[in-house]
Image 1 (cartoon, rainbow, N blue to C red):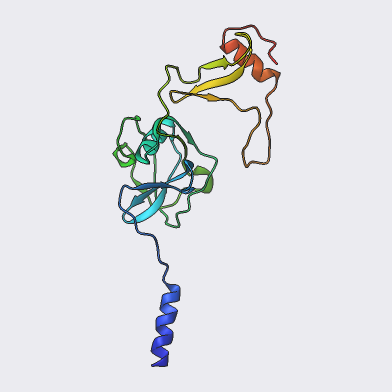
Image 2: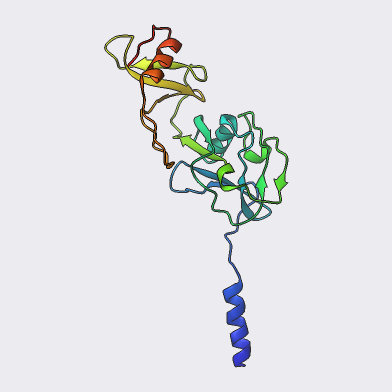
Length: 197
């Protein structure tokens, strides 16, 4: 009898309990915030989405499915890593941005492997109150300056204006600071002369 109890305990210690999920559900590997690596449920297991062809249209669908605004969603590939322990991932996702769910988007199916850490698709979602702006992707503007030639730099990303930071807040080891070359590009793009500061 003692051997039977020992075998039961040994078997229980070896079984890995996994969180069940509903096929087509999505979540972020950083669930307490509105950004992170995207995970999708397939065949009852969580898996990642590889970042091949990943863009803001894909991010819009993910954010919308998670209950965030589709506007201002940014598809990123260098921030968070999927927490999924299962070796499957969606590859070559190609959403238009109008789909209701991520699995409604064209893709090349499930791969039998997990994405490498540097290839997990990530999103940055905006709150549901974020409204669509009348701007073109990549357009820049200067706001809150004393004149039209100065101010805080904003850029249009996925139909929302956002502030350009002067310093990188990345977890990478290198840092980048805004300089005159950056100012000159913004000035040219805004239709002004160069020599920005």
